[in-house]
Length: 96
Image (cartoon, rainbow, N blue to C red; front, side, top):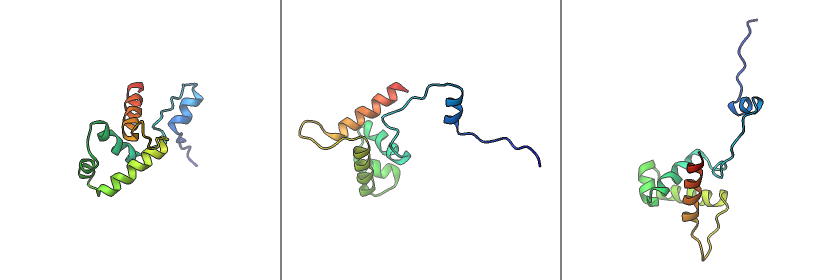
């Protein structure tokens, strides 16, 4: 039986080599939610994001709600969750 190289998760390799892991506030988001959040940060409306991603506006709205939930950004009278999500995105981008 020939020896085969083992496939290791890059995160496991980093930890084994003692590399620091950096966690992002955006880690809970799915790749699609990140695809929705990025144009949000560019001031795109939900309708424009839907056109860009070729999905219905309701799908973008659902992803937006998911973003707010995962980032723990409830609606409040003082702060808008969309603005707070964008600030989190920009903060994470600046830390990278």
